[in-house]
Image (tube, rainbow, N blue to C red; front, side, top):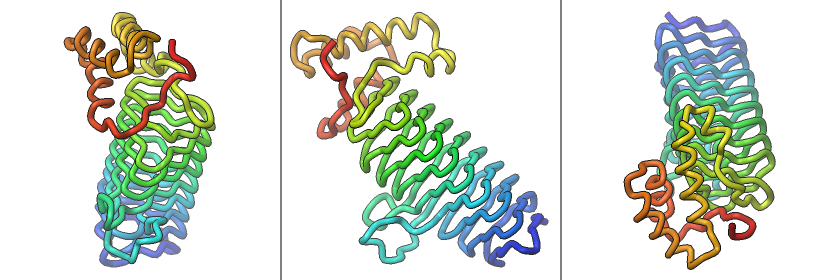
Length: 264
């Protein structure tokens, strides 16, 4: 049977695994599902139609499943779905989707969401994502696996951030960030590859060398960007990491990209 502190308010209709722990002054709504090993330490709130995966931990004043901050929202039963082993530190908020959007906000597995981070409506957050304190992620944003967002970064709505990318502290990101890229500034611009992150994630020296060579070609001075894109796609068709970057750019040509301050 779930361990529930006597000061917590848990709706009888909530679906709780027997191993769940709910601490003092927490609130859990009727349409909430808490999987095996979930812990709400104290003063945490899980509301709305929200599923929380195994072994997630909610620190004080974290709030999952709140209504989207969207003027068109009329109380539709949209959702939040959270994967396993995520840590939500103090004052983190994750809002539900909108009826006009995906209808669901999703968070993958093994994420770390530090103090006062916010994930807006209809977002897609991948696996092993780290958000440092006070990151703000607007609605409809896609953050792929292994991304690191530095403290106080702000991600504009509908922006895409590719796998293994890094956003520096205080970065204001209004354009898409390529996989493996590193962006800084207000507004954020591409500084190069996320070399430190790639090394930490076990990329070999050879893999990084190939990525750097393709990056230099893609952002060189010669020719148009489209011509360089095709050159890289042809020359590195056998390299999955490079083709991931190419596919990221091609999948939505209408989206602006974060680019270097000046061509290399």
